[in-house]
Length: 350
Image 1 (cartoon, rainbow, N blue to C red):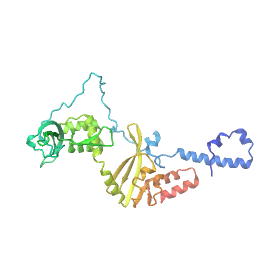
Image 2: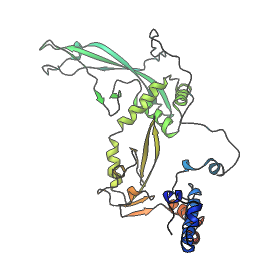
Image 3: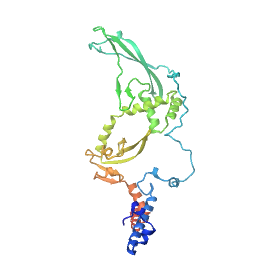
């Protein structure tokens, strides 16, 4: 039975109904009945009986789920920031105030002349700059980590062949993010950086709490900006792993796929997740068929487990997610349509 459209409903009034014959009135009543049932079904839809996300549930629908004693909630996403003093033109910035003892010194010498390729002897080199790197070192025998502070000294040398000056150069690698370059010249070492990623991403601690953990456990004082930058740099250093993960997904027999909304600052994106028994890959982008085809393409020949999103439907070897099917059946069982109601109950029973 078809339902009446908004345009048709706007033309209905008392005068229009009075001029209709009994046959036309009966036909109109059937359409109105179908429209009322359809609209009531739509009003009752939520995340428990349809494919709508939980974020779309109304407040009273959310409050009915597992009511119990309230516990203090910890917000890992938006840590309350401390008030920041406004900086004027005459204010000066501040560097690191903590002075850790130097545990090791590493000398970095240029090996060959930049101009004539002649070998450069280390005894003729002079130090021209240095930088410090804080890291964690595993304690032998007892486990755990202790902080270390390594001083890296960079040398330059005058070539005896062409009398030109050559310096040890630190290579910088540009990344896809503005103002972030990967380099060995960095304050935070690799082990400490991995601990920062573990605390923030795996354990869900805010940057402010990560900062407190470093001070409490290791006596290392880092600014929130330095911690954030190190986490970003570590993520960018792992960027080449993405292609390796894709190859593992392509060769899998069963692949689970889903997507959800994701805010990046003020920009609305979508987080796509692809999971197999041994691999997990996250991608960020728009909710389009092109994004789905990053993985679901001619290279993948296994079975796909997904919801009913249209972007997945062109792939033929596809399972429907069991949870989504149960919610669809529950929605039919709660429908105002008699046939849909009994069919939904039978599907749930099966």
